[in-house]
Image (spheres, rainbow, N blue to C red):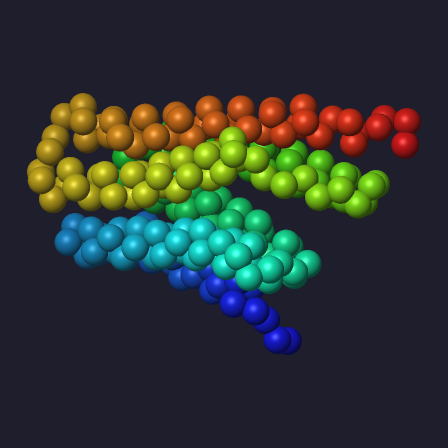
Length: 209
């Protein structure tokens, strides 16, 4: 199947997700030393940043050169969801096994919010598309939500590494402040953008049909 550049970038992002997850999950399954775990986290966050960059790039190229396709409309948001949810699953699991239990607790709540929001929004999109052929585009609030998700994931991966290298102890290491602030912001924007999306699309949800 012949694909244009934006679709190739979406496929690349989709391929990067399981590679990223394997790298991130290795510390939970293998008895590595602290240095090896730090290296794996750094590699993991670089992979996640690279995948996030392809997300920004494929959309810009598709819009600029009019390369928007039905395949891209399907694959691009799917790859985004796999990327973010996969990363959050890794953060939760690794921290629940060998990392920061406080971070694991925070991320199971964040994960529930993100998954429920994406299920609700995806369902509404399907209904709107099937009932009237309406494609509801992501608004600025949704884009801001995506940015905070990326920032929060990066912070949750790299902030503990910085404290480990700097040998920081105490409450800062137990409750990493940058991760806490960005994750709470991400949870808020995920809920807020989801409610905003549902309210805006409510006219397409006719209970009599």
